[in-house]
Length: 363
Image (tube, rainbow, N blue to C red; front, top):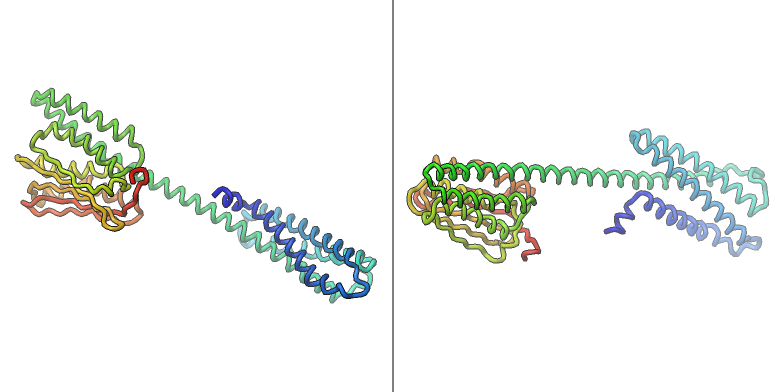
């Protein structure tokens, strides 16, 4: 990962291109132009090598100047940058061509470069020199704009992650005041009835719940195992209120404990089951919480056997279920199933289906 990051820097890409590109240029010229002349009687290998070294070094230097110039103007509009860059490449190609020709005439033929000048020969060399600089210019553009796109993509991802975390944070903290209002209202009722011991016990458990959920659980993502531990604290509060009227049973598959879920996923669902099931009835109520894995899907059910009316069903769809649906959709970047099914006298069940992602710490 570190090596890839280092290589992705424009400076490292540039030096890799320069060294590799001009080394390849040198090899191609040697094999295509110098090597076929080995059998000539007046062939000067030493002079040819010196001339090739001068030609390659000049090209390396001029393309470096071109790189520095393009980096300074790349922030301009694309049209202006292209015009300036390729015009500069053409001028530098002309300079490269003159130096190549002068070196060739002086070293290989011991002539002044403009003596016995053949314009057809000069034009052929010029076309090759300018084309070489154009190729380097095009590659420089690809490197710089690709790097810019990568940076913009990374910034976009960071912005999206920040927005998602902020949304999850907002949705999560909609739940805590909702739960606290209901609990404090229950404590107030107990005090009003002069059941101070129960009120004090409930307040102590509320403090434990808030300490666990707000202080220790700042992450937006939890596991099903941790959610069950938090749910146990919540149920201990409700047990103070309802005593033997509240019966809770769990049916959790062992392989689901590591499943990643939004923090405070189960508590508002069970709170709805208590409020619109147990609290609204006068008798004993049973709540069954189950979780199972079906292929790559986690299915969580919260069922209570208390009867409910159509109006109660709509109330139960309040902040808890809507919030749960939004948090799941935000966390997984896809629509997750959150369904409430009420069968009148047979009770009410909330079913949640979400992608199964395992936290390896609990696997």
